[in-house]
Amino acid sequence: MSENNYIKDIVLSNKNREFKLYALQLANMIRIRNNNVLYIFDEVGTGKTISAGLCIIELLNSMDSGENLNVSIITENSVKEQFKAKLEEHLSLTIGSWGEYKEKKYLIKLIGNHPSRLSEKSSEIYDLIIIDEAHIFTNNDNAKKYEKVKQLKAKKLIFLTATPLRNNGKGLEFYAEIAAQIVGENQEKLEERLNWEFSDPELLCTTFNPYSPLTRYFKDITRKLIIDEDSDKYNILNNEISPIRLIPEVWDISKIEGIVNKQDCVYKKIVEILNKNKENRFLIFIMSKLETITSTNKSEMNLKYRFENDKDNFEEWKFEEWKKGRKYEKNTYYVLTGGGSGENRDIINCFRTCKDDTLPTVIITNYQTSEVGVDFPGYNYVINYHINSSPSKIEQRFGRIDRMDSIFDELKMCFVINSQNKDTSTKNFKSAMEAFIKEYLTFFPSKNCLICAEMMDILEELNDNEKNTLEDYYKKYSTNEGDIKQIYNYCKSGHKNNYEIKEKLETLGFKNYSQIKSCKKIDELRKLLKRQAEKQIKKILKRNEEIKNLKKQLSDVSDNTAGISDKILFSDDARLVNQIESDDAVRKIMESKRFKFFKYKIIDLLM
Image (cartoon, rainbow, N blue to C red; front, top):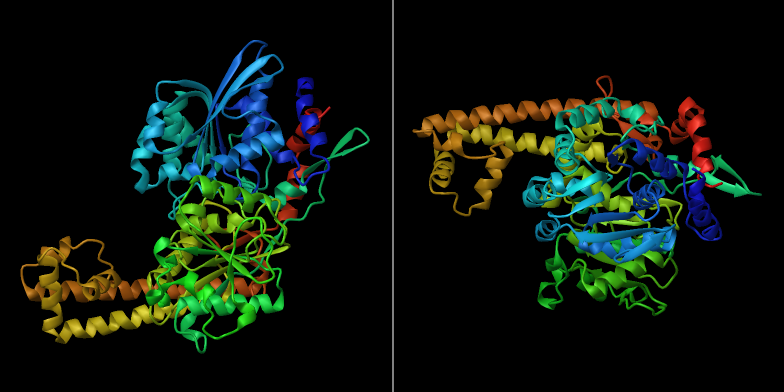
């Protein structure tokens, strides 16, 4: 590996900068030698882009002089400039045109993941394809992308994503199928290997095996295994500290005195936090551009207007609209929507690299623009004005601020809900919590982005409210024939808009209306609705029993669940939530025979 002094040059050239290379990143150079397919499923913010770049360098090292390397990186359009900047700035790789490395030429292309762009590349055979945010290709909503990406061909393939699984823990089979089609390996064997790697969630992130095609490491584990250079001697140290995730917080507008809408809730909470410390910065996720319209006659649904116009006349807390390059004495806000347009790319790059007081105090952004792959290391609060029902997408949002180069020591996730008047976000919040605890953690060790004692109480309260509603329905369907006829006619008439009936049927657990349509008489429908209400009530009682059990487990750990605020969590048959201490994981890795042996190979990369 003596050829690899290119890596030593990278370490030395970045010595006085914030950028560092880590042992677990460099281990991927060994890993790509032993596998045609890699699954780098490390936590958000662990430097997966750099790991992929190091794999490219390793492939260049393994080539003979005069050979060419052809690489394609598939990613979101909004992230392309950021991906390019990291590889060019930190690894000195040329992107978009032919580069040269020790008498070898290479071409690295960044390709958007739109189906039409993937179709254009299906006739080429690459030496390496890197699929960034690979989970996008396994979602039902992206069937066209899934079919098109399978038409690509390469000798080696790397998947990059921090959230590879769906809510229910499924999805591994899609990676195996994509890999089999692209590199021409046996799909069944690929799937068997993946399932075996995932069979023990704890071992997944506490062992070191450079022969394994899959990694699931976390920032605090990665950062504590740092490469250090001192008098030409390189060591792997255990000395870096990551930002701490604080316990998530719920802002329930139905329980805050004087608050009548979400905009007021967010605004007042931010002002309270800034009163304690003006250095705080906030990233607010909204649904779409609709919530940032500027028309004053829609101010009640206009978050941007709320920051512009303080109706409580707190002049000192009026926010100015931020413009790049200017310094402000007052707090500022900026609306970031619209994806990867030229102007947005410039602004996004500014937010990635700038960490001083020229940043806006508040960024209001839609999930389409900033939920995946965009970095905000100068921010320490994520506020979910719009809440997604997927725990993996909520984790992606936390990852926007939870970066290797974050300037804050503590980070916080907040959720805006209304437990009394359940809007879509409140329903999604409930779904995400249940999926995270009961399903997602069962398959995949993850950091906490949803659990706290208060949230357990809210979840129990939401379940009780739903149970009371179902019991009310049950009584109605025993006595009120008019209500049953209304449902009967609604389903028979092609589901004409009637939100009230639609919501009732959702609460009763009907995913489609085929059972209702098959009822020939009103009395048949009455019996069906009562049975369905009883069934849903039993489910809620079971869920509440599970919540009580979980709350007891959490109280065994810590009175206020602070003990799990920044731990790695997973579920098993015995307990709903288990913890892994990052220091324990680091110790196990460093004491393992494989790591002791391979760390000298890693260090040899630098000599």
